[in-house]
Figure (cartoon, rainbow, N blue to C red):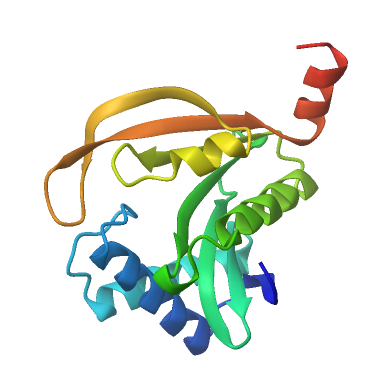
Length: 183
């Protein structure tokens, strides 16, 4: 991976437009990121407007991977957890443009998301991915542990049901304590 810069995104028309392009492309190509195909540009724009507003409030971090002036990937770190879960963060909306897949962008996005979670005193990350067409291999390479699979959890973007694999990973001080205790 060369010349890719990863940074948090705030609300702006440019960021919203590029994120919308990516999510429409991902959904059109079978990516299970909560939307059905065809994803209307207005619906994608509304989703990202809300997500970026939440990022500006500090409820989440939307990371973008930039190849020059082109946004080529994104992942969201959800931080607005219930009062009994202040130690946890959740990974959502991992996406990479088709033209930039296989270059390590998703791995880099995940590593930055994890580092930012640790900075915010999070000790546990959770995420889910579709059984079919999901990114389980990536998450397992990054140390996430499969908690289980829920069958028929969601519709695939082009129809039909798919299961969801739920993952977790201890990070920061929790991961360090596990290593120190020999666990």
